[in-house]
Image 1 (cartoon, rainbow over the protein chains, first blue to last red):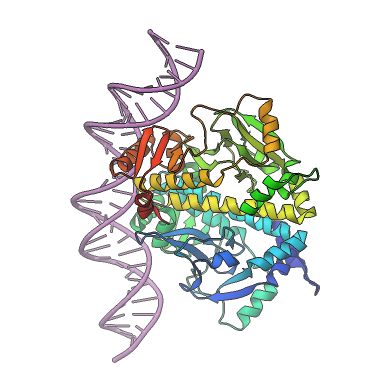
Image 2: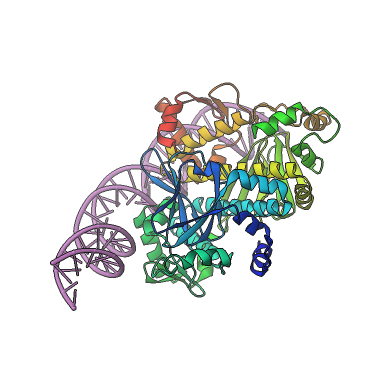
Length: 252
Length: 252
DNA sequence: CGGGCCATTGAGTTTCTTCAACATTAGTGG
DNA sequence: CCACTAATGTTGAAGAAACTCAATGGCCCG
């Protein structure tokens, strides 16, 4: 995947320079503010999505009215592979100035058939999505609430660090220049400094993600702070002090 | 996916008749008995796997010695996309006469580059794996143990029914003819009749899959039986009597 | 027939959830 | 500039749920 990013960054000529750019030529960019819905229900059957900037959550409503966050999406993450025929499935922006590219599924399939490079890129994205989901399964499989939260923090840090530079600068800048400035005082999904994670989600969201009550999330964070594993300078900012203390109990 | 199966079943000529058969030409069939290891650790980085017959579980050992079942695999299911660099990851047969096809990753990638049909088939398999994992996430997100077990039963029934006929008959029969007979008195992963599921796994396995203690699994099954949702003629056989009673509480 | 694995059931304990109150912060309008 | 409001986060206490430990019985296999 790093190769793909590098190729993207270096592309300069007018011809579609790389597989991702060729795909993006088919895409419709969707710009959303915090809390706004990006797509609903069966849209996943006709479209694929990729987060370009910001962050998003994918939710599913149960019959009992409980909300489940199935996936957290950060820049570079794909979504929509499974067809998503499930009802009550929504995708919402977590921060302001979230940009999601929407690809028509049929055209993407046609592009993949015609262009092996694009097909390879799509496979890589699908495999990345699988890895993401498997990490999530390993997370949910933990027994302890503290372990769940600790592993969640490590996974979040890894994913925020894994997307260091904005890709497809030409496109996202073009969009950003005609909207408001992309800075947001508290909603940034980007990592600020080594060992420091800015949570783009509330305690309640984390709870829906980890199958925990929000109070339990709060208590688990407090417990991790007490034992010196993390620091909590602000509710949405977390310093990861003792990474091994988290990993020791949370390694899968 | 049904189109792929139909095409496979109808193929008769000598030329590699369809994408899956072209992929299978690169595969090494692995035949395992119940409990035997199919692959270990980083093998997923070099290979892809597809279950041909029987059933398998994919496990990950935590640091605390706890075992997590990350995925249950039935005929047609793929595995190995994510590279699986995680240590302590194993894949084991759940029933006798389990056959798994092992594909060299590099050759599969090369085939996908050269043959759009194969690439499309691989995408379809990857998307199916994503759907599988998302179902699993929705399962783990449930709060109640009874709900988890109920949803697990429905998902298991759906997946066992989704693979009605053995694919690639020529190949698996050729293998079966030089081994023992594929019948197994209690290990069949196939559905036996409408609304009846044969569990290929122990209560302990189910617990490792759903993040529950085996006793809780047993109690949940007993509770579902008491409320008339299921019948338990034998420990490994489950009649699904009131599907809506399971779905009402377990719909995602 | 004995041994081991699996499944079930019971009792006690830990953990998490729920309900509630309170603190903090951001946004709003006077 | 300040009060007000709403959303969010924290903390406490009671209850429910699941886990652990333990014992029992069934089944298959040697």
